[in-house]
Length: 483
Image (cartoon, rainbow, N blue to C red; front, side, top):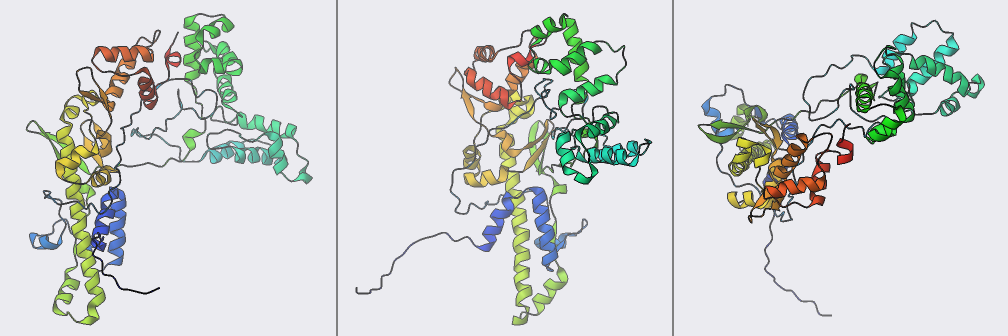
């Protein structure tokens, strides 16, 4: 085979290190960005934090959070299909779907909802320490004390004993000759400790233990004890008609039993669990100024960087080959300062475009949210959709109506009978509004909600209503009905 040489011309896009860094910084959250900046500060002596009172002479090498200037955001060669996520919502419901197990959160138990920012009082000691402190007050023989301590160690963070007594006995040394009956006596001690309900094998037993310590003259106590032991599933499924027959009571009696059980804690040990706080740092703050909604960067969230003057002066005076490493670090520092500034400039441009498109949301709330996709903002700013996707992911906007991820303002649309479109977020808000105002004795069905929306000109199928209702964590009609 004869070998030949051929010359071909072709074009391809090369991502420079600076462009790669720009793309990477753009998709980082603010917390991740600050961690990346701290790492660069440790590695690069040419880079340092700018003082709060830095003078204007540092301007050319300092990233300042002042007014944003239009800057082309990096598009790279990422031309894949962008995300178009639908916003999500949540709603608090006092349903009984969690009564069948120990994972529910209702009634008097502490909440672990990540969307709640109200301060909670958390015990300083662990559940194990709290129970062992009570054990130390008991005058028990050493063997019994060790068995009770073993059961305390076997409890999970909610205070439940998830292993059977037979299994626990099997874990202990055979030479001790410990059987399940002996452990049962030890378990009785554990179940007598505070908080009430600890040491239970399931939710029903925990509720029964909590009812047992109540005053005997507590209204509806006897019926509540019967329900948690024999009919908890009926209460969870809101089968109030059958409960009335089994308890030989009326609607008022069922409501009394329900309210008493709802006042108990399904997770008795949760108050001692160690919780981690998740903080959201808003990148943009939206305010109404002179009748117009305006987005501004959150200066507290932005790292302020500048070049180290001492090293920069040394490199200016000495440009020989011995300073190649410092020269490279100087260039990296300049890139980082420029890319951080470009990142926030792009975030501000996108945020302001979102605010302009969603003015009605800021004026009237979720019900006024308009349908919007990534391409609308991309075309508006002459950017690629992938850039908009990066900018709106894990970037947050603080508004008078709350803090939202930028992606929250994008969503699918539903047709109206006038030929227009309604945002899925607005429809979910309307569903939440309708269900919040419904008669609890005759709650709205999905079909009825679809009809009510149809009367407002919004054409939504019953299946879509069910999907949106489930996204709002609203139970079906049979679980919302109360006697």
